[in-house]
Image (tube, rainbow, N blue to C red; front, side, top):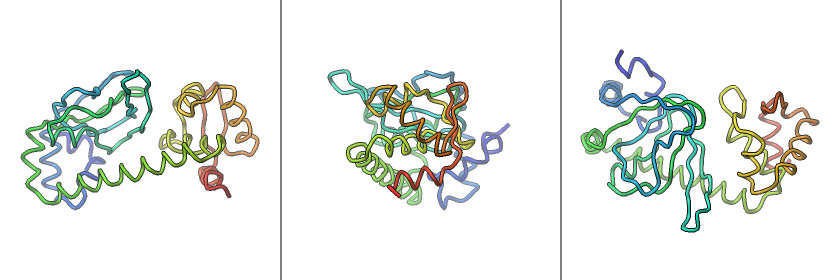
Length: 221
């Protein structure tokens, strides 16, 4: 089956904003379908890419390692998001690594395919918009990480990590690492959210019960 028919939801990705449907279908059908198990490094920091990644299903952790070996988690990319488009266009090494969190399916858009379509001003504009939104998102998260209390940061992490079913696949230990604190501290903060009816924890898995309530708590209301 043609990829454009197999994954029609990808036509709504930011990368294809305002692009004619026929062009989007042509682009998607020229991509390569890949499915990988959890833990697979799809893009590796400092390596050159063979193309842009367009996530069809699943989640990918974007992380950066500094010269001392310390790893910082930057983002969790989900369905419809692109990874490596700047490196594919610039032919420069990856700035970060992208690792599948759970099984993931994605389309690999080869560098040659990118080159064919980048003469279109709409594709150029969309890449710039994605980059600007990414910078804005990272700046906002940096502010949260540096200025918010742990309970408010936890709300931000839960909202960020949750899937379309309001489930958080990552463990409390993973979140503790994200927050740079102990698991005990995360468990205490989660207990407060649970008592307020904002989340539930079943067999170690977290599920959001009230996204609006978490958003209000994040905003300090």
